[in-house]
Length: 226
Image (cartoon, rainbow, N blue to C red; front, side, top):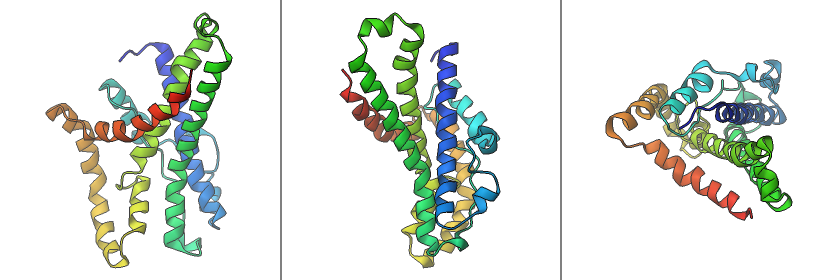
C-alpha cells in the first residue's frame, strides 16, 4: 500500500462522509419515528466532529491502513430511545438498517458518477488532467468501496455495530436477555480477533467476509463503465 498524499486525501474524503451520513441517517430515522433524542443531542448535524469516536473513527482505520487491510470503522453511536417508537422492536430494526442503507446509496452514487464520466469524457482528457484523473481513477472507486466496507462491517451482529440491533429483531423475546448479556463482552473480543488473528495466523476472516460481500457488489456496480 502506498501512503502518497493523494491516497491519504482520497481516503479521508471517502471515510468521513461515509461515517457522517451513516450516523445522521440513524438519527434521522429515529426522529421520523417520533424520537427527538438524536436531534436534541445535535447528532443530525453533518459536522464530522459531532460523530467522531476516537477509536472507531481514527485509531482503528489508521491501524488497518498500516496493516494493509480493508479500511472500515465506526462513529460514535447516535443516541436514541426506543420508548418513543410505537413498535420498539420494529423501530429498532429500522434505525439499525438506516445507516448501512445510507452507505449503500452513497456507493451506488459513486459508481453512477464514475460510469457517466467514463462515457462522457474521452480517456485522454481524463489521463491528461491530474485532478480529474485522481477524482475518476482513485477517489470515486475508493469512495464506493469504503462505503460498502462500512455497510457490511456495520451489519455484523456485534455491539455497538448496527447488526446487533438487526439480529435482535429476529430473536425470540425469551432469548433477548441472554443475548444482551453476551453483547457486553463480544466487541472487545471481536476487535482483538480483527487485529491479532490476521497477523498471527495469516488468515483474515473479516477481510474474506468483506471481499465476498462488499467486493462483489463493488465489482458489479463498476462493471457498467466503458
